[in-house]
Length: 369
Image 1: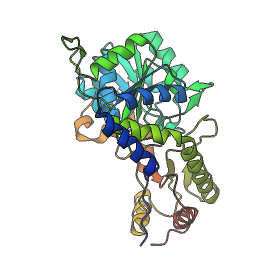
Image 2 (image 1 turned 180 degrees about the vertical axis):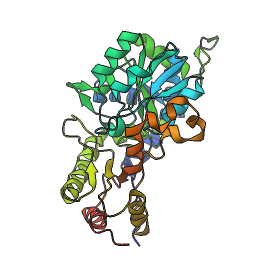
Image 3 (image 1 turned 90 degrees about the vertical axis):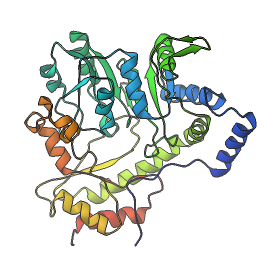
Image 4 (image 1 turned 120 degrees about the horizontal axis):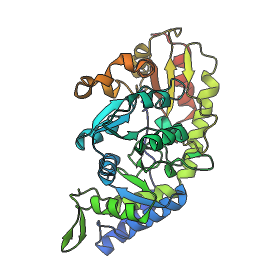
């Protein structure tokens, strides 16, 4: 049986990567802000339309460090509908997460739920651009200004996404990207913090390198979160082809839409207004009038060698380490509860074959076990 996975990483041309590796071996400079690292930061800033990029060995360490850079304490309002790294980064900083419900139409944090969750202990907001769909950033930042709160966007899914003619990464105090192998743009593992001033970039760069300024000076209790030269070289090669990657993904997305548009009980994420969408995911939402339950459909696809993913399920707030928090009660998260029980992300990657999409959608249209 042929197996179709939910995602496959974009890989640079092998001969190009071998050439990059030869350069690294010849230089004998394999980490600590080397030539490839500097070049990738500069080229990403130019491609994304942002001022400052600080590369990290992974996106989780970027999240943890962003909170450190802004000195976040107390409580942070965030979403339960995300990957658990979003909220884990808060616990690692001794910060209490406060969960707000999401919008059922775009899966992002509901701005109407944010203000009622603010207390005297709230210091920041951490929204997520879920599936690469931008949050309601103007409203979020208006609330933040009103209550003197910091805003850190988890933009792990939002590589290249735009809003009002500019990158979504230019909003908030800081934004975090993930360059994990499952992402549209990857450096095998990796991530970045996007900042807006030279001073903040310097602080972030200090924090990801133990807080070291020079051989004799340590100014912060930093961590080791640097991206190495092999990751950076890999990323530079993928960046050359990322537009081609996104275009191929768009073709897969459009074929899914065409083949599933008339299936009763299957809803879709509306991306019609999103500019620069990167087609990182293809989520569908299984409703009560579909022939099978969501989990039954998941099992049916699995039995046929198709590896979909219930992404995000369970809610972060359902995990034992978070479920005892008052705001984690599902009565407070009614829209998120519906989404987590209905979502199914179908396979999505640039090399996905048309015949595979047809096979997947035929099973969804005719779900006979």
